[in-house]
Structures are given as structure tokens and as C-alpha cells.
Amino acid sequence: MRYNRFLSADTQFMKASEIRELLKLVEQRNVISFAGGLPDPKLFPVDELSEIAKEVIKEMGSKALQYAPTKGVTLYRKELADFLYRNRGIRADPEDIVVTVGSQQAIDIISRTLIDPGDVVIVEEPTYLAALNAFRVRRPRFVGVPVDDNGMKVEVLEEKLKKLREEGAKIKLLYTIPIAQNPAGVTMSPDRKKRLVELAEEYDFLIVEDDVYGLLVFDPNIDTTPLTLLDKSGRVIYVGSFSKMLSPGMRLGHIVGPRELIDVFERAKQSIDLHTPSLTQYITAEALRRGVIERNLPRIREHYKAKRDAMIRVMEEKFPKSVWFTRPAGGMFLWVKLNANVDTSELLQRAIEKGVAYVPGKSFFHDYSGKDTMRLNFSYPTVEQIEKGIAILAELIREALGSS
Ligand SMILES: Cc1ncc(COP(=O)(O)O)c(C=O)c1O
Image (cartoon, rainbow, N blue to C red; front, side, top):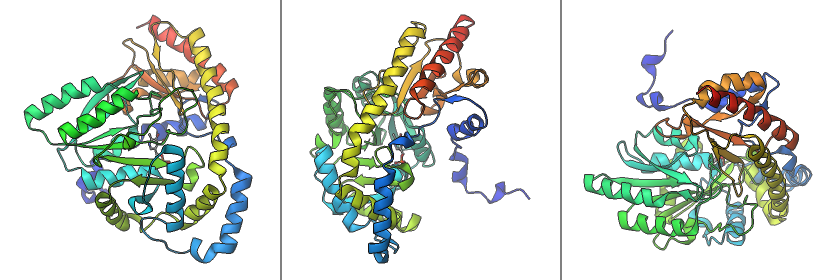
């Protein structure tokens, strides 16, 4: 039986994630993987969470195991609003928050409710690939803006906006990860953030700010002000998550935005899954109340900093000087550009044979360009694996550049 004739037209825009396919391959072999995007499970506050989970089920089971409002458990939204104020300076009324199943669902809901086919969606080059995939289903017209060490090149954005205006194109939204970006690891400078918000005003578009790494910055003197604090007119839709600070398995993300949009997001969510699981919201509300996340954050930062330092140290020592790589101030990823006519997707097979894996950069570009780039994850592998794996990768790159 062939099912193609039964599939909706949208399914042809649903791309399988290249990373997932790849990880299957890596799992089967003894390979040092820089390919994933997993937090280090050593950092999960297992003891505190198991105690809280037991108490929540025993003492609040009648609510925590029950259906909940679509927007999210009220108690959790209150704790979350307080957390966002204490740690990100964001003053949100709990009614202006929708709790989502990870921030991935937040992006998907935003995509479904705001993007019509042909609308201009502006993204960073490179950007988070699962956001691209969520947008792709809506068939937008992507416009890419490159990043450098200071995040999105806002001056290039401005040129592109001018051209789009001349064409009469409808610019719907711009998606950005301003802090410790995935995949490039770069952070937007304060000047650029300010200008970006001004441009949204001038050219009348919305900004989706993905702040999942906002609290995972480990270098001092880095401005981590969220864009939403610079926004005077309600153009920034803020997306956050506890996946990288607590546990991705809890699947807790959130959208903070203007009430009118939040109501639309809530309606969309109603038909997707009724609500985010009540149990993880109750557990996390209690974890927030007890300060578990805030206590754990310095440990996470310190741990990831050591891993980032190890990765950069070996790269500086062993990578050819012509290769460009970023020096992330936070987050979990580092970006490499070979600056050569080498396709990193083709190189990957050889890398896996040698015992190391990465994600080829192409899938982080809306147009699949960037073939000489790769993303490396430093949060999951151990320092020893990083040192060994980067040395192998350096050798592989030298070989590839030699023959390019
Ligand atoms: C930039 C970015 N946004 C969103 C997500 C989705 O994470 P979650 O759905 O676990 O919150 C990720 C996960 O890697 C990410 O890197």
C-alpha cells in the first residue's frame, strides 16, 4: 500500500532532522560526538527533583495529575513570572504567558499563527534548524542575514529591509537567538540589539526572541539584556525554556508577549494538545519556589565554561590558521568555517570512521548554503573526549584542506 496520495500538501515541507538521522549512526559506534545538543546529565538536580516529584504527587496529586488550563498551571505561571523578573528583568503578568511543551512548541505555535505563505521571515545565517523547519511548513519567503562575532549583522539587515520595502514585500517577522546562539555561539552586541528593535519599528515587523541560552552565559562583561526590555511598543515575542537550565525531559517552554497575541497562541495550543503536562509544571513550580534552578545555574556555567575552554585551547593549538571559529561567551555550541571548497557533509563519513562526529552546517541555513561549515557541541562530551576529538578533527581538516 502506498500512502503518498493520502498525505497533505504540507508534509512535503516537513524535513526529517539531519541531526537525528546522524545521531543514530553515531550511537552505534564508538565515536566522540560533537553532533548532539544535549545538556550534560551530570548537571540535572536529580536528588532535589526526585524529592519534589514525590511530594508533589503525594500532596498535590489531585491537581498535578489532573487536566490544567491551556495557558499553563496558574501557580507555575506565577513562579515563572517571578523567575523571569529576578533573572532576566522581564516584568510579565502571568496572564501574558503561555506555557508550551518546550520552546520548540512555542516556535511552532508562533509559526502557525503568524506566517502566511509568501510572508517574509527573516532569519540569521546560520540559525536553529528546527525553527527553520517549523517555519518552512508555512511556506514563507526566507531572507537571511549573516552573523559575525557580534551576532546578526544588523547593518546588512537594514540594506535588505530597504530592498524589501522597495519591492513592496510584506515583512512578517524576524527570528533571532541574540544570546549564545545555536548554532554559531555568538551574542548580539548592545548597539545591534538597540538598532534591531528600532528597525522593527521603522519597517513594521515582529521580532521573535529565542532566549533559551540567555542565562547560560559564562563570560563576564557580556551584555545579556533581552531584546524585549528594549522594546517600547510590544513588537518582541519572547520565547524561553527550562530545557538547558533544568531538564529537557520536563519539556517546559514559554512564550511571553502582548495579551492579544497570547490569546491567539492559547487558541492554537488548545487544538494541539489542550495543555502542557500539569505534572512537570507543578514540579517545576516547586523547584522554582525552592530556588533549585538559581542555585544550580552557577554550577552549569562553570562546568560548560571549562568544556568550552578545553575545546578552544585544542582548536587554537591544532586547527589550521585559515579556519575560522567562534568563541562562544555561553551556551552549548561553537561554529567552525573552513574557508575552503570543502563540503562538510561529504567529510562527515570520513570523520565518523576516524571516530569523531559533528553536524554539517548546511542544514542551519534556510537555503542550505554554508557547505564549508560545521557545528560543534561542547556541553555533552567530557573534557577528555573534547581534547581527543578535536585533535582528530584537526587532523581530518588538515587532510581535507590539503586536498581541496
Ligand atoms: C535556539 C533553540 N531554541 C529552541 C530549542 C528547543 O528546545 P526546547 O524545546 O527543549 O525548549 C533549542 C534546542 O536545542 C534551541 O537550541
